[in-house]
Amino acid sequence: EHRKGARRRRAAAAPPQTPDAKAPRSSSAGHLPRPYRPRLALLLPPLLAVRLYGALASPITDCDEAFNYWEPLHYLLYGRGLQTWEYSPVFGLRSYAYLAMHAAFARLASSVLRSKVSVFLAVRCALGCTSAVLEARLAARTCAWASGEAGVALWALLLSSAGMWHAAVALLPSSFAMLCVLAAWTAWMDASLPALPAGSPPADRSVRKAYGAAIFWVAAGCLLGWPFLCVLAAPLAIDAVVALGLRRFVARALLAGALLAAPSAAVDGYYYGRFVLPWLNLLLYNRSAASGEGSQLYGVEPWHFYLRNLCLNLNLALPALLLAPLLLLAGRLVPAAAGEPPPRPGRAAVLLSGGYLWLAFYSAIPHKEERFLFPAYPLFLLAAALAASEARRV
Image 1 (tube, rainbow, N blue to C red):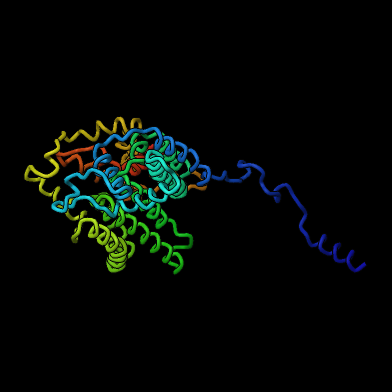
Image 2: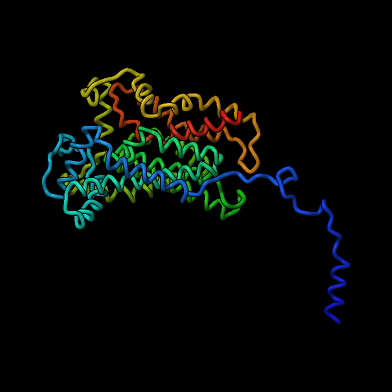
């Protein structure tokens, strides 16, 4: 009886159910549609398939890859291989530390695979898988940073780009620099998306950690890969100084440099037989191009060479890349869809400016090669994806 009385009292106290009090069942009743943001597990498999196929089927398109990297790698693995003048101790332009990273995996593969061709393909497959993972992470982060539509567009462009097809599996420092750009820009986007309200200590730690990761990957790309990457990463560095302060930025940059430069110098010193800084020698050697020497000895091209090259490697994404600044500005006038972050053309301009700076920098240098654009391919495609998304909204 006591339980029955309690149930009656609760029923009497409860307000009567009316149609207005029921939860809405459709978007017309006030239920906002959830934006589509594919998970990493959905984005990764197609990229892996394309990169693995590229590792097995795409040819080596650059003579430098064959003679400056595969030949010395063969020497590290099997004790013999051709040496180019760049590896002479007189010049010391190439880093053995870069090769040592790949030699470690190749030696492990050679303990299982008997054929040298199989080891060669295993190294290329490892490069392709690494690129696929980093590309998928950048596309997934773009879904959260901009919109699901922009992230999916970036994913589709990465899948279909002829430039990425070659760059992702190439044994070249510029390809390694591209991998570092993928990792660094993903971390940079993370810095714009704190998990907690801005200003709280955990959120501040999250932002500092993200900037620290971005700085580390840029340092890795510069010291172990392509020292000219500092040009492309200049906007990131400036943004990090503004966000962290000069003292914290310098501290993180010095820490990353020390962690990378010390082992790199040790490996290069062992193989060259003396203290060598290949990244510095490469910068000094190319500085002589102003006097008609250096890289100009190997041919010069007009300023529009890279634009013509990008017609092939980016195809339909090239017009979107060139129109991206205008479309991002126009997109600010249109409100964001429900559940999507508001348009941030200023932030997007900072994020993408390194790609345009890179294109202008290398277009002004007389000696031009397709591989010089590899580090900027992800930013070119990101700009095209954001532009396509904004064009659809506008």
